[in-house]
Image 1 (tube, rainbow, N blue to C red):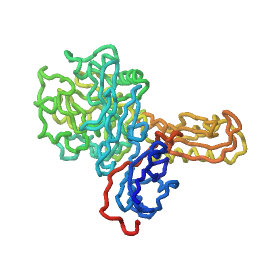
Image 2: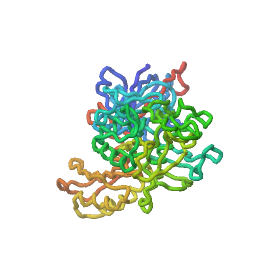
Image 3: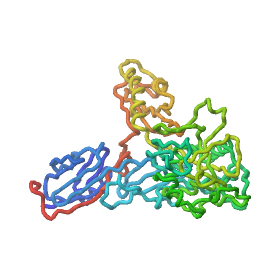
Image 4: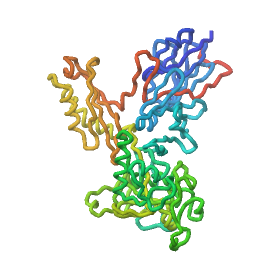
Length: 526
């Protein structure tokens, strides 16, 4: 007899449940799909390893931890499931009975997205499979990728999600206009970030700072200029306060060039010097003085690059966070030049080129510098937001564990009853400078202690709630721990579900990719 089964994810396990009139109303976990069978076994393939499994509704079919693709072949049809991990930009993902959703808060606004189902490709091969369900339309996905619109003192600034990655920074030896300080080298950015799609406008600068200091005027959508590096630091701090403490900064030089190139390796994001035109870049066309004829243009006057960023070439130069380093030629991970002995020299990096500059000065690799107090009509700024919800890199998680676990083991072997504050402080004091315990949370009901480690990357943006050291204990009293019985370290609380089972909140979900019907039952599946 052919019967229909529900495929559900409950915590870290996959189940088959017989589909009845009441099964969905009583369903525990997340519904992934449905399948039919006339057999008492199914052919299960987990990442290429195939087994025959009995159809048992009370026992799990398999674990989903560390799995990429699962295929359930009933003999009548094959159900293919693929794993979708929590996106780097999301604070959490959750599934109800109908949709897989992702959410993240920015400056007091919650942005929600829904997984777009359908298609046969594995989710990891698709650039973005999420669509916005933001009622206020302050976030979304377009041809360039994910974006959010942040409101700062009634002025809207769009930010683009820039995914972490590896690229070749600098210019090849044959590139026209190349300088000796542009040696080509590999750079890896481990932290994704939000980058403003335009330079800061005069309207936004005035809204935050209370005045417009620009040389050129006449339109609030013109880029702010005549601002120093120090002015931009003050602007970033004030903007951060307006956005409820959200990390706001200037991009590093590596972040800036990575975003400017947008996956390209040519002199400009749109090609070589021969592809340059005034329709694409606001720059000094001739190799001579403009005689007062040149000026800035309003932002978005020229086409964006492949990642949706406007005027990365020309219009105004842009300050970067880095102190000037003469030679960048070594392979680097998350580079930023902050050498303290250089601070007295006051030289900071400028990228992008300006309305007054020649073509060579507007190339992706071009590097310039000026003193941090310089206010020139060709220098502006672009903002970057910190990614507050990124995962701690694996090596950092292991580093935290290496420091924290000996402390927990020490107390686990002790017969003393201690306060959770003492334990938390011991773990916190043992961590290196860039990793520290954010808080200690004691849950008396479960007799456990959570020490949440907070990792700060080299740029200074915090990645919050990244690692949890959990210790199970006895329960002698509120605020006190008995002898530690066990402990564990996890990347967040990976599997968490409310007790009703109506909604589940995990770090990864299985998604239905395709259903393939068979014309005949598979031999041995009867």
